[in-house]
Amino acid sequence: MELDDLKNLLKDQSALAPSDPPASPAALQQLLKSNPQSPINKMVRNLWLELYITIGFLVPFSFVVYSIPIWSIRVYFAVLLGLCWVLILPLFLFARKISKLSSTALPVKKNLETIYALMKLYVKRYMQFVMGLLPIFFALAFSLGFKEGQSGKHIPAFDKLLTPFTSLWQIVTVTVLYIVFVAMGTYYFTKWYLKKLYGQYLEHLAAMMAELEE
Image (cartoon, rainbow, N blue to C red; front, side, top):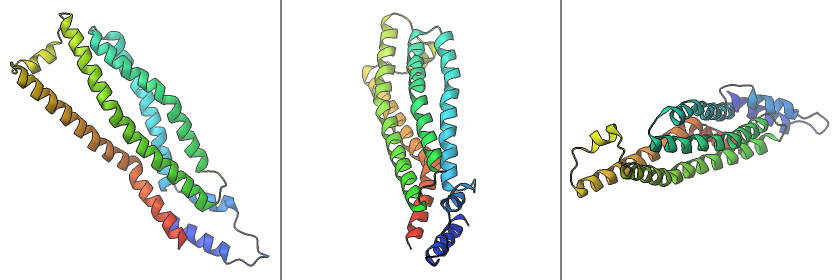
């Protein structure tokens, strides 16, 4: 086990006589990065995966922007496309920073604490960012749809969905239910997604730090 090996090496180091050479930082660090299944390596891998996925979204979003004749959909996906471009650099810088920290020669406990704190903050800001974007994109979608309707152009698929609802209260009810459903779905999906990619490994990392204190 990686944690057992790490604890044993630290114990051996603390038990050395003053004249004995301590375990090198490289030896301690090797235990953190040598196992591809370690929580740190998995989080680093997932950070780079998210970056590649963000870059991958540029292709379909660009296709929609330049090929779909409906201007409101083109504008909506142009905003998504711009958001992807904006996120690429900070994602790259953060993934590179965590990658460097995972292979630096800092003291082991300090290294674990630094990575844990940064990843914990990343997960928190990630959730806040996603939920903060929801009202913005709701407002954007409804305003674009309203302007599209005012121009006399209609999206057949949307018209079919709204055909059964003839009165204002029905349309308002369906709209509110749609917003609530999408918001709740996004919230719980994002929580699950972040736990899958980072949360479970942060818990493992916290357990490692707690045991190293013993």
